[in-house]
Image 1 (cartoon, rainbow, N blue to C red):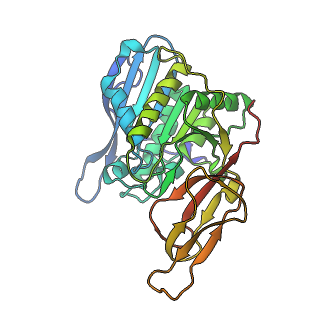
Image 2: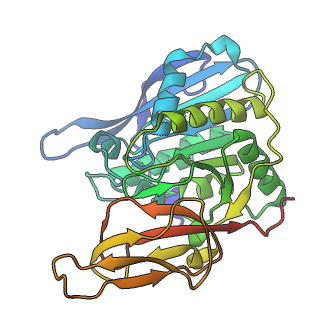
Image 3: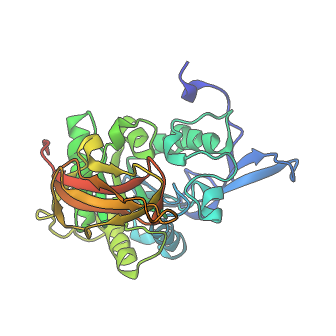
Length: 340
């Protein structure tokens, strides 16, 4: 039996997800760790509903070390007047809440990566219970989904909006149009090597128009990138008809893709990684990409790693210290697929 059909969830909410106006509260999941017999994990949630229109779900804090999305969604929860919208927003700024509080990519409670835990399990660990709630209760209410990521603490990525590939051509067209409406400096098709357990892959399976982002990274907050994220969210909501205003023309947005496993340059040894190039630089398969130094053994020759694809340098590892298998560099290539 599919895991999303197993078990009855014990999660409950402090607000009416289908009620009008503005509400803020929590998804409450009973949680009984060593120091709390009858406690709960509280996942913040807001609903802003007015008039007729689509339901748009906005997620931040999928990874706890990615900050721009939670900042922008929190602003909407506090500041947006319900009278300005037509439709409904479901606002979830800190879904991987234990990781958000800890500033970590994965949950310190169960060690799981929220973005590799869909469709979830209502009888599983806390992370699996939260993703099961998203799968069962949130996605069925939605028409569109914005999943706001950055590179987090380990990667510094070129600021971009992300297209999740969809098998349905009509959904693929909607995804492309919504991503271009976001108005990021570039748009990138990212399949995560076909990974089905991500939030965006799950949203596409549910038929939702889906937009992802990679808002910089490096474990910091950039004022310029927050501005791009804030403006991009408004643009998509206008594109979907939830907020007033017109989406600016985006026909010239450069469109790239990650070309499968060849997109990634991985560390081949334990050491310190020295990249050779800056973001946006044109690179070629076979070209030297950087080298790894064993700084505690200076007589050992550095090991050079190479690119495996033609394109531009899209992302670089943030910490210099690496071990075998760490992702050091990411290459994006011009998109060759169909747009319709």
